[in-house]
Length: 540
Image 1: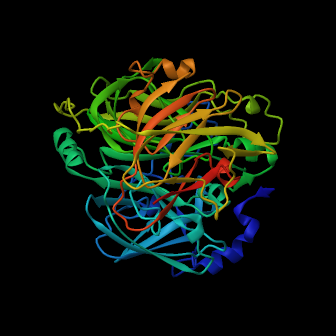
Image 2 (image 1 turned 90 degrees about the vertical axis):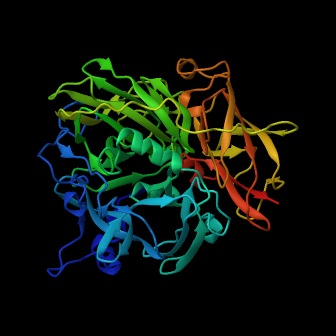
């Protein structure tokens, strides 16, 4: 199957969705004009046709930086709000309108697309999702401790034209969470065409760090959403599917940050906080900052579940699908005029299925190949004397005394379908039940002939205890005798499990919601998820 968003009759869709806006009837184009943050959302910027991420040339599109409205505008929902997944016109290549999906929210005289939600721990959220797509959908609030009615289970997906109400408190600690679609068998396509965004929760630890380093969300504290996509010469997204791609996942040959292709960001000689989210369908990244040929040292300060206890210095970091990595990068050692590139460094993808690319995958960019992501231009010198605090938060370890251990096996594909404990997703089947307030150790084993799997659990977070039989490229980044990397510390909701590896983590199923709660446990390679690498689990 080959899919572009004109597959639904682009003109018809745009007309029906209400996305043709303005007094003159012109199309809504999400680009630099839609964000008061001043960046380009895949449009704007200088002319270039060199969109190959292997080349350092062509980084002339201003990064779309979250501003007060528009694309990725920062939105604090202080009152009930409406969020509508809908068809829109946008620019993936500069000056070439194309069809895509976005979440739209209107508050007062401001309109947001894929807003960056900014919330405070303890806040109550009330929202109505009005589905303006022509297929069913539902929103999953990824990483939140939330009851099953509000979690976004595919059993609650609503058809085109229908609505769904959310009402829940923010119980989580401060962290970079996110939201994305979760209808059964449609997640990959809907996310690929644009649905998804940041969900930032703040607490006293975030406030203290912001004060200590003089940070401001949207200027010196910047969410960075990384995706890869295939785009044809006319600027239209290509979403091709065949049995082999279903088995491996969709890989794109163009890299986008905040929906901007080959972006740059002007920075001052100071510390910046960068909140990374890997929202790709199936690509893993190994991030590094390069000034010339030298890797810059940065500090890893947070992951899926928020700030770590202390900063960890690094020069490279893996970020698997759906993972978040929060870092501090210091440009005070640079001179005005310097260029710093964010790159994904070469690594072994450990996927025997992708060695031979002769399976009609439109992308020519291999998983594990080295390429450029974005460029930082050191544009101004500033007086700045702040220092990174030695302590960031308190992480209380889960007490595993008397905890039972559960083995989870990630099975090789049968007819293109991956399995968890030999189960393929059945909405009516619940293979795992756990007792409320119980503590368990889950051992996730990935077969040696498999491929890496990013494993996500809904509603609760966990603490990684150890990695065993890890590949050398993981061992090289380990910081303790348990084989853990800096991003394994603290709280997690996704863990990338490499072939042959076992990851053991502790999880306490303490939730303040009455009655049986039904959640999901799944691989976050979206094609794997859509093909059934997902199971129900319930808390009794």
